[in-house]
Length: 278
Image (tube, rainbow, N blue to C red):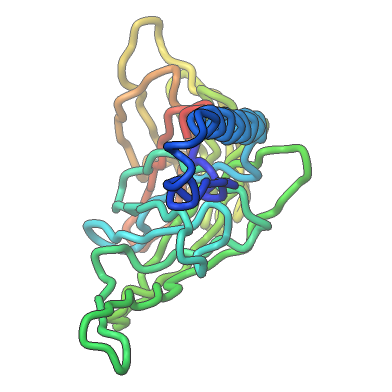
């Protein structure tokens, strides 16, 4: 979990005691006391931070794009502060990222990564250098519930023709309560009912609807078959057949989209991760 950039530090001016060093032996003691107080304050702040769970945990994946795109974000929404903690995010096509902790008020902003920033000299100065402010490339609104940590999967879609790297973010609720470990949510974008055989389970997905099903495979199996059927003329016709690597620890989403040649499937698989690992 990322740590807060805000720490109250108190420092004694060393020059103030320079003359007194020869006359008084209390100065080292004062430094020791001051150091102890500061360390105690930091310890209390760190303990309070560790006990405060994030408002949101999220992971990302590049959607409708190729390769990857790098952003940065401020876990405490303080990206405009000079000493703000900034964390790099890589949204990659076909791969769910590691999980990130967010402590803000619900408006999550993806900004330029540090590699894209340019150092510029200040006006009327030959030596002073300032960093160009980070541009907001994408943002989204997340539901915040006091006392709870919500989990989201963020699908990042690059905006075509935008050289700055701007993108759209689609937010998908991804809490364990809705999609438990070992289960997948099948979401249909078809106008027809789709009939699914997933491992040892058989079920129907109504048009434009979602169904959550637990993956059931033979004991010891490390793969899971998927078949999609359409009912035509009273018969069930196979329009898609695939086999995926499988683990009982996986959970995720399966998007089913009807195409002129059949059905296109997109699987997003995720390994559950604790809050402490974010």
